Length: 320
Ligand code: TXA
Ligand code: MG
Image (cartoon, rainbow, N blue to C red):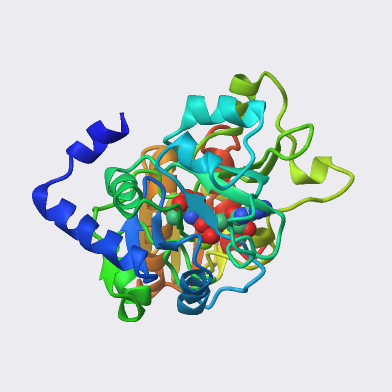
């Protein structure tokens, strides 16, 4: 399946991927598309290469990176895979699911943010899979934005954010999901949802035949270190509400949501459903910043399916 996806690349894309793989093997940085958002990749096993990722993003060094692999066998080289994690890998990979597992010693402490665990995922995008295959290495890749900014879902945004700091941005067009992968901690007795994302909690529960816990369901709060930091911050205030609840006297406001708002927004983004709202969210935030609006009202989605990840990102963009 992976080789069929790689075979779908054009000759031009393949040349860029080969160039990217040479850069990765030499310890350099390459931005590339995944099915979720664009990633900023480096050799996950090379401490200096990984240090350069933190540097380029301005990312706090205790926030660990996801290792991107092109097969379960490659994941086996970097983490201990337990039986329940294997069920999820077999069912949902390649796809937007990152699994936190006990790290093997080959994974540098820097990649793990000093933790004893590491997150692994197999992305469902031909360019990403080809880049991993051709470099023959697990690729550590956070989202390719400056730390704290919305994640990039197209190559142009990557170039404007961090393009000057890296030798290559591989353009694969708009990403399919628009929100990052779901991160699940699989190291304990129960699976714990550290970050909602492209794969729904319900789908994971169906595959495991057990409830996936939320961090707040637990006595010990185990959280994804990344969730401590303010994320996805647009430079405008963002308020979550319903279409009919935009304050009557609001001036120069922008609207984003599935429903038509009541009142007169100075800019608006209307999406056909939750999936499109999620796919366009980060691009919409960046566009509305430039619209001349002074505040963004964003429609609160329901929390089923992709809605959970969408609401999570909206809440963080609102500063909650
Ligand atoms: O969709 C995605 O996951 C994208 C694309 C590029 O693959 N990547 C991404 O990476 O969103 P990043 O670095 O922006 O977010 C990784 C998240 C962070 O919240 C981080 O704290 C968490 O995963 N994480 C990574 N390793 C972890 C670990 N060992 N334990 C707990 N959380 C971990
Ligand atoms: Mg990120």
